[in-house]
Length: 294
Image (cartoon, rainbow, N blue to C red; front, side, top):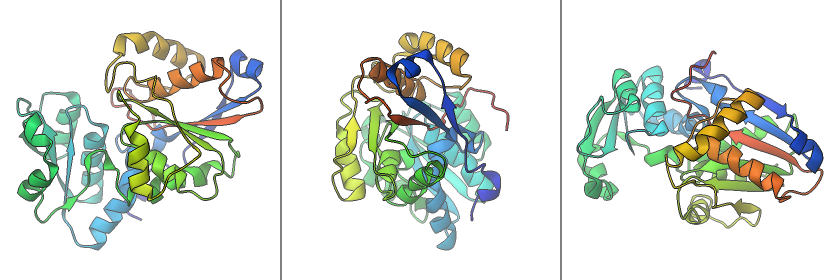
């Protein structure tokens, strides 16, 4: 399949140990999906996989998507497009920006992505921008979450179940696409816990319902761990990241994975999970500023 020679899957599923987990009588495992690829990382690859296959099969030569100056999706799509032989364009929120405004944009530009920088007000009208900039191209939505993202994300569960049967899977979310894919996997019967990285993250439940076409009684939202919102709370999370990485030797970042593990540890401390729970935390990647060895 497209890109599979470049991607390291299945990614490791690693049990981590702590006196806290022993005290509470639970197991905690990490699905280390950041190890898929240095740039096409984790859930970004999972969401893109079947979109790229469809784009190639239908004869498209160019991919167009939306994102901000620090978007993991922009970063991953630019790299994936280059690896798979597509031209790429990004419609970027912020008409004051340019190709060197952030390390993310610089990397994407170096992968060959062309940019359209638009005002924040214009960015809200995705339909108009699509008509203007995406004619003749294969359109992938902001964050990569669409119906074709779901089977790729469902495969995360397929890699977990041969090793361990979790009572709970927990992950961070910006759009809900990864959680939606996990919830569509009929072989997983436990709870799916979602930690939104945005303020007022309850909207993610509605987004998941739209994507999957149904409600999910085993979906559990935990909306208190956004730490101020997307890409916010850096000072609050910095000490946690340092201590977590030192204890578990797993790299994390401020936007998604630090909030995931901060929330998970807090929920465990508060006895949210039952004794004998087996929890899998999904590490979605997005480690743009880490030097990873593959």
